[in-house]
Image (cartoon, rainbow, N blue to C red):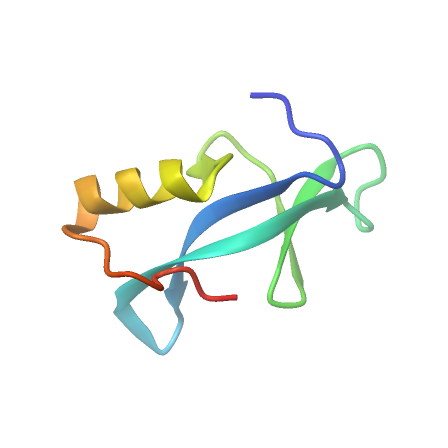
Length: 81
C-alpha cells in the first residue's frame, strides 16, 4: 500500500503498562522529521517509522475486522480517539 503524508490510518496499539490489552487507534501518516524523505506514523506524540512489519489498516472497519480475527469480538467504541 502506498501511504502519503496526511493519510489517517488505523493500527493496533498496546498499552506499554498493560501489554495484554490492545486497542485500535487512529494515527496520521506524516513526513518523518528525523529522516527527511521518509514517512512515519504519528501516534501519541511519537513518530514511528513506517515499515512492512506494521499492521496498518486504511479504515476503521478493516481494523475492526482484523481485531476480531486476532483478538475476538470487537466491542463498540473500541477506537480510542
